[in-house]
Amino acid sequence: LADPKKAKAYSGSLMRAGKLKAIVEYCFNGARFKMLVPSENCHIMFAPDYLRCPQPSPTPGSKQTKNAEPFGDASKRHARLTVLQRTVEIDCTGVTMGGVITGNMFVGQGDQ
Image (tube, rainbow, N blue to C red; front, top):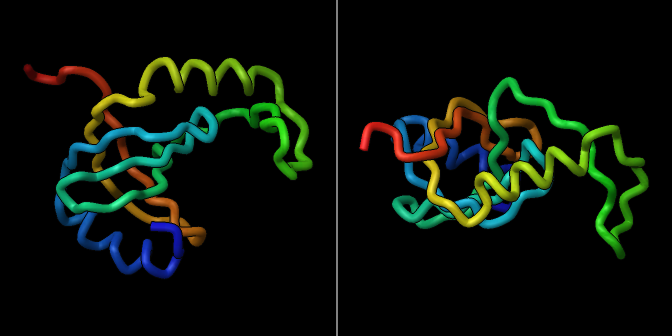
């Protein structure tokens, strides 16, 4: 959901749904992901609750002016190796003013 208004309107159904399976499609930094939720047939921006990661260095060709923080690239690399292109479970708890869905993310097999 690219539009923050649409994300805020859709967040209620995501929160009521409980745990949802999602596929991580892109990792922006160690704490912000683009996910596909197949059961709801939508793409969301997701950020885990209570997690703050340092800013990685900007990608070549981007217009980002912020400098990289210490360990920013390492946190992004770890997130990419751990969750990128994997099926995870998410439990949505809220939405930010920018339209980013927040909640808990579970990686791994769980009780299987």
